[in-house]
Image 1 (tube, rainbow, N blue to C red):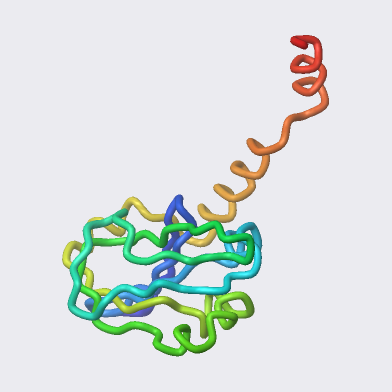
Image 2: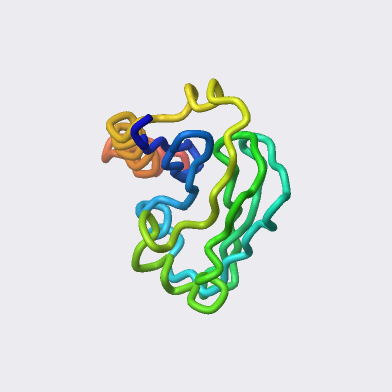
Length: 144
């Protein structure tokens, strides 16, 4: 099986291999969060359900954001480099800044995840929803 990259609506990615996947956060969400200064990694051997938080990142302003499991499975490996160099995730969130490797217990769960084209469309729609158009701005302004 060729490796396939899938994306969640909470901006994690999973590069799916034979029976497992490498998990990380997307470049888009890393840019939105800002500089990540700490990564709480899961523990090897722990099991997670799909969408369950398996770790978190902390940014310079002190805010923390969860990292969700893209599929149900057991943590097989973690990126221990992030313990000493969390800045790696700022420079390579979809490469060397990966979070963990998880077994994939139910490959059917991957069907709800997006491929790269669907994720790109999702990002654009989400960004559009975050900003009001000019007409919406004036409608909101009249309410005051």
